[in-house]
Image (cartoon, rainbow, N blue to C red; front, side, top):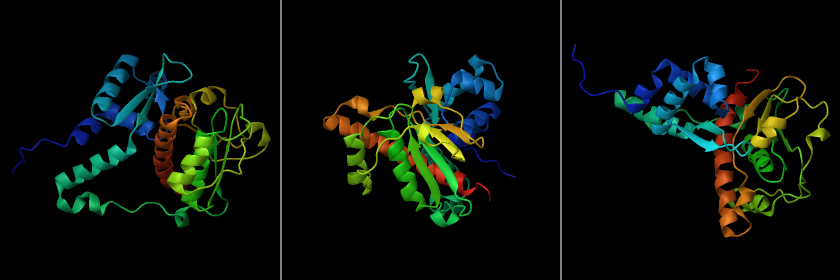
Length: 257
């Protein structure tokens, strides 16, 4: 049998290594720091850091400084980049496996209806990142997921740019909403508790029912100011959250299935 002289696609070469595959699967569910990945995969830090660098050089993983501890970095898996790489890998094997044959996304009808899945989004002030995530998931799931957001130190009002970006980019109006403290949710049970703020991740309380804890390390867009440049930061943040929400839907559809 003839053997092709073409080398395997880059994604295959990267993902085929057992440790890199472990790192990819861990980062597919949450953003993590190096020392957390060391614990999860049970390998020395220098080895984990080496393979993370290869994944980052390959464009599959990104890193950003923690807003809680600037000496630390959170690693994030770019699932859209992985999807593109997988599609290109399939096409390299056979035309029938090209990207136009990728399965359709999840619709609200695919989500569990009884009991409803519950998702809680958290950030410090509950004025920007978490209410944006709450609004986007609620719209994506058409009410089939019980979605709420809260904060540890809620601000008096929603950030005006958060209201604006949802209205202008997604046609969603949250102007009548107010930030809430997570202490106002006693006894509420959630399947997922998702922190979007590095500081909140360190201070997040326990919630009943042992929900799955996930972290999305997203910088505070309000740090960009109140001018047009500040609004552009909100647009980038909302786009990032929308992508993460879209990738969360298949996970939610698998609960209790």
